[in-house]
Image 1 (cartoon, rainbow, N blue to C red):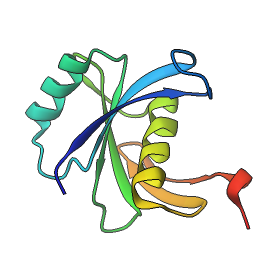
Image 2: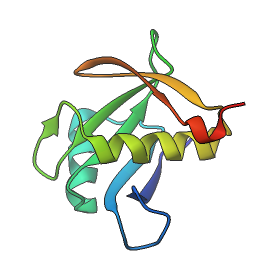
Image 3: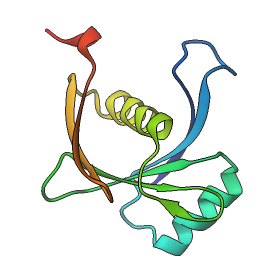
Length: 111
């Protein structure tokens, strides 16, 4: 699957509100240098890159326009939204980033 770039407004249902973040999915074939260049080009405060993980559902790396950061709340929300929409996923995801393993759930969709 070719990497796609998404602009997501987290914490809102209205365009141009909330906290904007870039999301790149899938990002498995991108180098760290390429991720940094993409984040700089997009210009969001943070851009999330979704990668394959052997021990979690997904691995997420976060980049500001100038540096990689360990975690970002609104970019995490944006990343899970994109992944769920693209893959048609259920309500819970186990994910990993530089800060460790986490679980995210959307209880609005819980069965």
